[in-house]
Length: 349
Length: 273
Image (cartoon, rainbow over all chains, first blue to last red; front, top):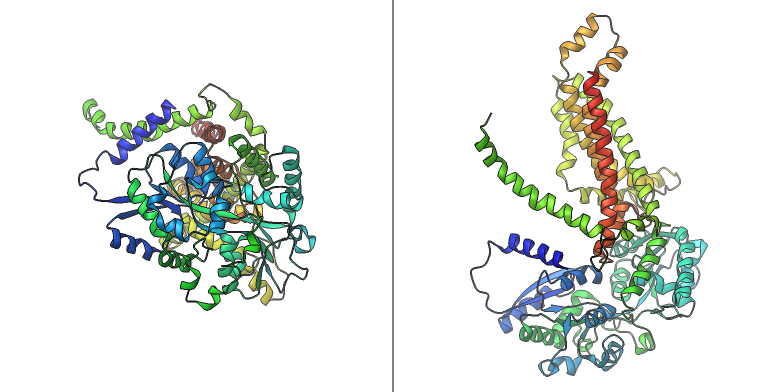
């Protein structure tokens, strides 16, 4: 530990040693997913409140965590996913929110989303939901002749070399676990070993394990089907009309990304103002327009101008789609490592 | 050239640089590599190389890096010979053609290869035009080797070319005068004299090819993991600095081995000449 401190001191001396000088006015440091906010919204926030937003972006929860844990940069507001919020809580890295300062969050964020968020944030003390979605299969109607209603289609020999899978331990193992009728927060090592075996069996059929590239590949018809987050589906369907989206009957992951405030935030008041601003319906609608991810904000739908999007069952699904679905939980450091080691074995096999 | 005092002053900036950005980070990596989470000495993380199939990834990395190096050498050597032969012609144009790709960001050119090799990529579209069957190129070891050769070929060409142009033309003329035919001139004079250049070329291709993770990530489709990808995942994704550093140290051993081998070879050559 001492060593880490030493490195940090050295690095900060080198990078910030010559800086300093003019005192900042009012700021808030936000660390969020890449391209997860409408730039117009940030300008509006600065104009209305006079608070300057400094935005940094991450591409995975896992790459965000060390930067926050090491404290190399002091962020005020973060936007991690469900299980990562739980990990931040259990490692004492975020602070309880003051909901008296978040009137719009209480007013507009749907109750069912706060309820679902209790699985990773009991009592809804630490987080305000920002985006949510499910995971499903996008498939090419001209190439896939079988009905797509089950995850097991991803094991169909007919589509060898035509299948795209998500390149992440939890998202990959979730699928065989659901096929076996198990929880996606499974901790029984025997069950997990079986899930791993299924993925190894599937590997020859898989064209590639992908993250963000999945959108481009499916738009260009590079594959017959791919596992995608529901928020990516409307864009793919719009660009490539041969595609369709389905949520398998075995169940899926109901994910929620939420706003949280770090333990050592320097601008706690501004952070609350920022989060509440994001919950204002007109602002949430602007973000929704920009992103296409489903919003837990109940005031947004009537503000959407694009009729097609307004009536899209993917962007605004009925509660049937997510009712009873599971959300990822943080399974502890050891279980995390076990999941990762299983996934690495699949990938190098 | 300089007296002692001046030399020390001139050296200081580099020594500070080397200490801060080479020595200290190296010590950190080794320190993390040989300790566990509680900071106790342990070689357990190093031992992990034999687990999880990490050793397979290391073997694959060494194999692909070797193949790419050999291909680069086979491509670059004749090219450099021709370039030196025509020394007084427009060689600048030819060498520009090989140096020019270096001006472009390697990430971009690798992404371009992705579009070329893909299932519905440029090559397969041409194949379809000619009524030929599609080729499966992307996400194969071959695609990774192609990416490596494309990216690292200039690093083989440059040192080879320099060592070949440095050969004194008069030696070649003398060989001819004394009755050596072109093959003899090549094997007895040009080849031995170009070996130092070939060796630095081999090192400059082999090491980045061994440690790359970008090329394999883009052209391997996440299905082929090289040791570089595993180290990258340990740091960025699993947040495990100890395993990441331990694997880096093991990789460093391979690099040092490569350098010792080439250095020994170099010395032997020098003595022979």
